[in-house]
Length: 169
Image (cartoon, rainbow, N blue to C red; front, side, top):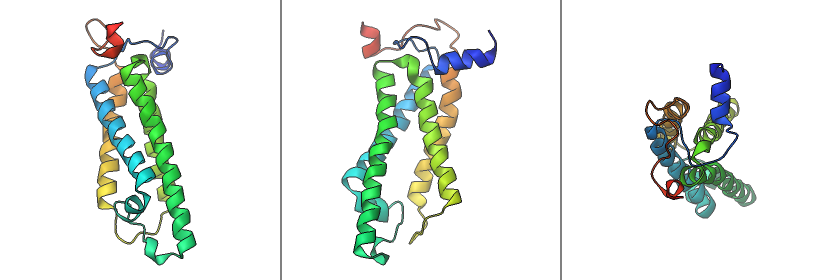
């Protein structure tokens, strides 16, 4: 089997089980990335005004009230869509560890896609979003390190499950 087929088999396993064949550190990194993404999504859902005007630096007070409310509604929707891949990653970590590489891929596509869209269509900001940019760059770095680690097999007991709920069965 060539290496491309191995990567595809790891990315889209035929069986979703608790067996994870990647580096253990990849699972921990995914946990951190998923938790941060989940917190960002929940903050956007439940505190859209602070998320938009704070870390993202969107000057809501410069817009008419209807436009500002539309922006806040879109932020809440974005927050919902941010939580879904993070929840998928958490399900992969807790129950279906064979899906950890796919969870990384989904998070990475979201991260790179949003970065590309913002480069193509920059948003007006009242201040540079320093905090948001640093957090997102840190998440991008975690995912760029974690994805290959999740695809590279461990040297010993390559199919041994990680400790946790999936290993208890």
